[in-house]
Image 1 (spheres, rainbow, N blue to C red):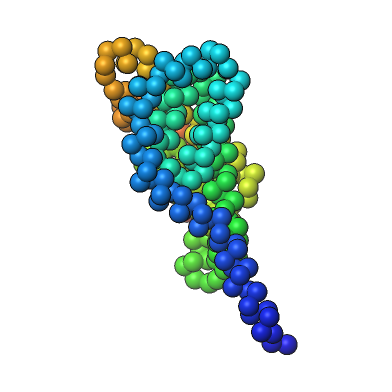
Image 2 (cartoon, rainbow, N blue to C red):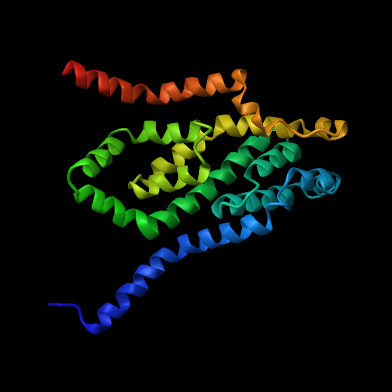
Length: 247
């Protein structure tokens, strides 16, 4: 039987309803990118550092909760300032447990984007790719066969934007559990670097300088991360080698 008039009216609403979380994220990202880019900055942290430290010393648990909530919102809505948030975590809570707070909050924010994208587009797009033929099907199969490696790579490579690394897995049907694990573990190296930089901000403030956010591209930092990238690629390279050898 064909669709009734009422069914046809409901379908677009359902489609819009599924897209609503992702549309809200995109709208907030655009508005927040314009209004908050000057507020979520190193200068703001520098100018308010004494008040932040005083509040932390007076209300440590509340400070942790508020900080992590703000960090989750920044990541979930792709607002500017994630690097500053990571530095703030190190500044307020030192390298440890600051890195744990940073990585946990970033992971929660990433999961919210992932779920919004999968709810709006990912499930249908993954289903279409699964039933398609030709090049599209081969790409989907290639991703499925190397999901762990691909997920860790997009987290470890500094050049991959965090927002992109959250969207792509949702659009190709990556399971939620796999996304959570690879995100949490994959962002630890970069998170540890920037949290440690934040832990040393007190001295940077005293000297009137700004932190070196490009430190992750310095050889002593970048080379170990590239080593982890090669380790993540190892299963894919083994599969390619076996395919060529006919194993």
